[in-house]
Image 1 (cartoon, rainbow, N blue to C red):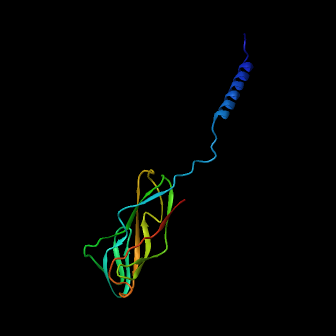
Image 2 (cartoon, rainbow, N blue to C red):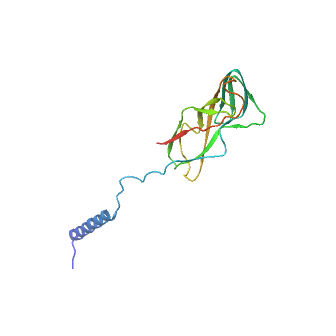
Image 3 (cartoon, rainbow, N blue to C red):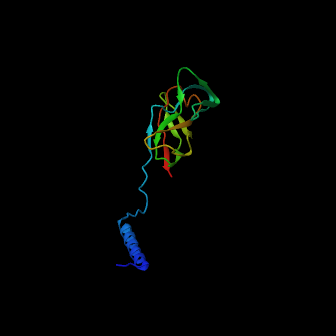
Length: 173
């Protein structure tokens, strides 16, 4: 049997078309990627703490920076006395490449052990206020949150311990 070039070419083209159709029928089409894993945030033992201080007749503020430094305004005097101060620390888990925005909640009132209350406003964060996860989900990203308390006159804010909670929101973009 003698085959011409046209016969071989036509046979080859038919085989190629049949192969293409078979491949097209066996491939899975995906319309979109699976939804991303949600962000996970865990509190650690390191809480937002302002340490010991004394306030005079007019009051002022005590500020904890997310890097751990402490400062005061007005007639507030920062004291050592063995009381520690620190930013709050959380552990954030997110997939690599996830863009995360941090939104501070509204100021909260912290009730005192001897009466009175102090206003707490959460402050800046490290990292933040917007950052991108550059690690795998199983690796924790430390998130440090600073804050500011507003201390009034001694009658409104007697010496004692002031405790409470605050909210922050993480937004996955």
